[in-house]
Image (cartoon, rainbow, N blue to C red; front, side, top):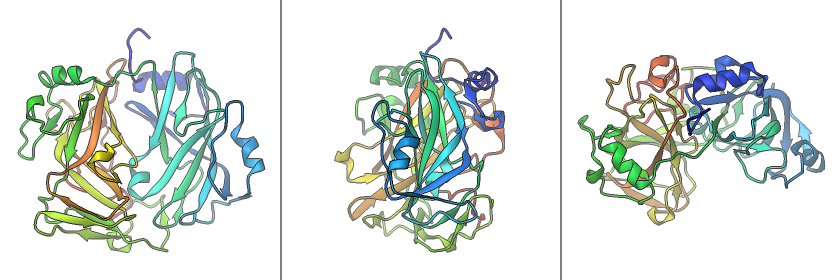
Length: 365
């Protein structure tokens, strides 16, 4: 592998074929990521933990207070579960990985984190890692029902960190349109008014829609992840409408909002959502946080981006105004262009989103 960056679709498929990703299925391969799936082994635990170097997750589980869970019963709200993932990893010494929740996981406020043997960081697979993976699952707003084989998280794999520096971002944006305004016009680097100077692009809140987003109501109703376009939004969420040019967010609430800018990811790149600087306010604006190559690009480069849907949780009562900084994204290079790009797949629930959008489990109203 001569080039540096994130591994694309064909490289991940090759790792499945040669046994690097044991028990992984080709149907779970995305343009630059691999969906991990739940095994039949799952436990209810009293709290989450991280292993120290040399410690196995299964050994720590035996020492912790836990009980066997059956998938016939839903995962309770605000309870932590630990599930073994089907995939067994045997990475080459130069390859490492990071994990993040799937979009539908984040949009339903299900908090998931991957644990690996001997790794004292969540969602981290170090270079040359060999072993099993576990997933901590905590539904935050309502109980959910999942089954073995369900894909709640995904892994991305790299041989080098190729996230753009500030200078590289300026150079790329002079040649490639990465973000667009609400009129479909490309935004130039020099037009971006809010910058952190670290190669990221700051995106702003869109309050120009009639309905600007959704607030989770919290519920004892069970969300079954196997059902698609089944639930009415009112069963779990309420519409958020602006008050003049602002909205009020409650401390600890959970909101689905949207960016004003449309994001376009070229086939040679991927995109991650990074944490906002705390100087922007005490909130988190993403619980998923990854965009595959070709997202908002169109099948042949004809598209002019797509607004990003955000999962926002404020840690203080907040009043957020239109065009306020709300999210931060970083582009990175792949080792090569993937054989399949996001907008050519045609099976995603999110290729047509033009504003804040709930998960694929909800009916279109």
